[in-house]
Image 1 (spheres, rainbow, N blue to C red):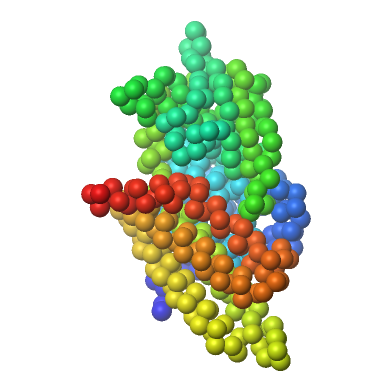
Image 2 (image 1 turned 60 degrees about the vertical axis):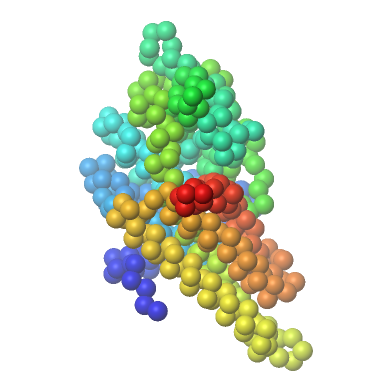
Length: 385
């Protein structure tokens, strides 16, 4: 079926990204995966290509687009090639929306030009050891100094994507104690300079998948953060975080769909090249039926994602819609990619084949951005249950 969600501009951008990936990412990706991060100079190349500035207004050096579809194209093309751009997806898809919506003019003038160029990479620090999805339970605190000029930040964060190389981190913290009647109140966002005294990057975490994306533990010991680096109003961060969750979860859904489509492509190529018992693996009825099922599943995932993309651009994507899309695609992706790995036989378990990385990479999609169990709760609540 003809896909209508993308126009000529999106498809021209797709070809540019595809060529860039083939030239700048594919030849080096295994090395990046082994070292656990992409090099900083690669982020500069993404900046030069304009990837970081797509949704940034022109007055700050960006292209001024207001559509998430260009980000979707990047996700699809990375999955197609079996690569990732490291922590840059957090930089653009998670951190940028907060700066654009809640940053004041002075902050945007100060941060966005270097954000666009890749000279300032960002990350967001929400999760803490022992809290997981319970953001209201965070214990990292920021106390306003007596002279009112800065906050004193103390605490720790974990599972921070891009945290090893980030220059600024949007740190969610308590600027006032929790109210028993409203545990979500009192949380704020400070945009912390990684060069600040008392700011420390702990372990670079060794993950099952997404191995080219650096993930870190962070700690803050009496870190002084100027009041000018508070994003939005004190105590309102939980509302801010909730506002961006539909886009974040749609981004994860698109990733799950794109990896599933890539898995089918890799499996299709493999079974046509591989011979067993004197026959191409593709000639067996089981192979045909498995791939047919996977193709139908991928078509369904694509339809869900495309519909949600249109809703997001129209500012109509609800929290329940996004949760449903994430739940459906991530759970189904696990089954599709598993079937495609099975068709590879023993070679599917070898990391030299991209299907193995897809299998490992997709597992976290049912955890981050809200677990599948949380997604089910959101959808059930929207049904009045």
